[in-house]
Image (cartoon, rainbow, N blue to C red; front, side):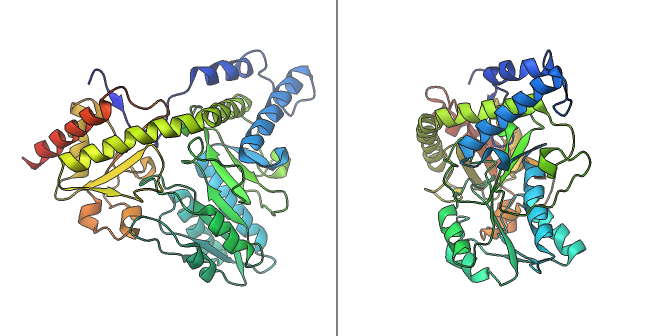
Length: 382
């Protein structure tokens, strides 16, 4: 292949030219503090509120529901900690989640357990990473304060039945449901999920790193984690990143407009890649749900070879990919996601993940990439 082929879009994506153009004025002439009561500040405030309204439309929420954050990790922290802390005084101190969630959800739950006496139930998933909504319903207690589930898993791409989970919550007294949509934004429709809180991150969509949002319905009490000047309606203090907010709104709108066509094109290319790798590498096993998965995610295990060694061989051949979550990079521990799916620890450590961008792959790249993967695995075996 000519030039490096970047296949780690689940970790981060390049900033789009349209996004850079949209945010530039808020880094230059409209640079004001949106809390300042003068013309320059009011111009910045208008840009901020316009971005908030645009994001709310894509998410199917109200403009005032959108809280800007520094990224998906902060958005998930604010949702999990903020909703549960606000529910402690009414006596609700139980969280329902799954063992395959992003670390920002699981570690937030662990923090609440250690410092606030909160209890949690990790509802198991099947071998493909799917959670049964009826199991969620069975885990709900009278003191359950929150259900937190990822829309699509960041490692294996499995998509959850959010409608079923929301229905389970509604049937038990309308317990708030938080959906981590960091990976699904731009790939799956987000309006109409029925969730009470939704987290997104800009750098997965073509906006810069360092900007994200949590949309949380106004009826859900939310305790702020960052205190100070009372920005974001008191839910997240600190001078807002106006240029980042405009970038996030622009990237989200572009991804939403392209979503149906991009999902179909990339999904077809990814299916060719999966078929090619399974045919060329007998030891390869696809992880995640074979059907209910993100269009651009293909994750495999290769038994009896080191996943990290395969990645190095692929990079020598001009292919940039990963072993899973970028948030766990450098860890020698097997993926907690694969372990929860019943994959043996030794096999879980052989995982390699390919995640395509919204523009897809050129020409016969899926077939050529499958041949390079077979080459890399053979090189490691030898």
